[in-house]
Image 1 (cartoon, helix red, strand yellow):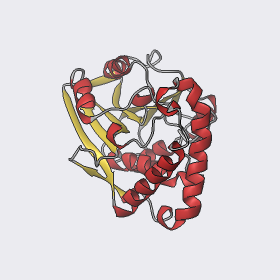
Image 2: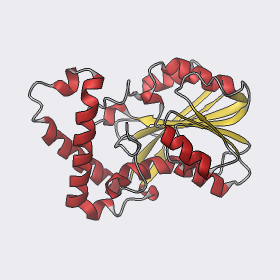
Image 3: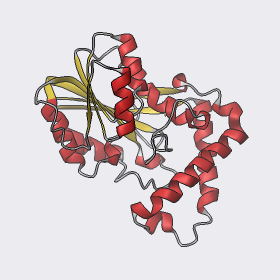
Image 4: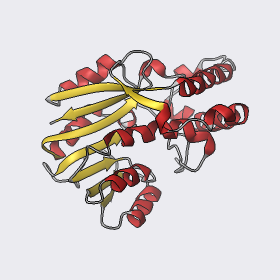
Length: 260
């Protein structure tokens, strides 16, 4: 997967803005809460760590990512950080009971063994440490994403997290009118594309077969949406998304605060 694929939303690509701002919102929600030692899993280009460091420059940062490109950028940007290239789980290079906070935004859906993933995070957290986690709401998906092993309903995520963490608080991230207008336009556009899938390969084909066509069509779709609806997209920022206690079909992402 090249680094700025549609699955790794970029701050530099205008058509990625709605999803980029949606992910960015999660960092804004936690920037006043994190302190001490933090581990981010899957930080990508590191824009989230930029937000956290700008709010608290004394953070002791560790970061784990599978991408060589991401790791090199992170080392250049955060030379004092403990930056590790590794597929997870496990978190074999992170000591047990060493982290005040772990951050995993839009990651768990990419993990085959999600229980092992959460158990490893539990292991590296200090007593009373906190995992901040986001993941898409399965009920809001507009198509099958071959990069995801699974997506979760509220009940599935609650049952999994509660079986490992002593305190599992799950809220939702949803959008303002302009953000939801983009969501609906995207949903309609994807539906038009899927009408050409007469054999229903989107539902039936193995994940590895779908990854390349998904990437091509997803980039085409986002670019096309930007051309047609730039007036909507340019008005979307991190304030176009907000936290809600309601976790129903209207929630775009789940926002989890899980305490050891």
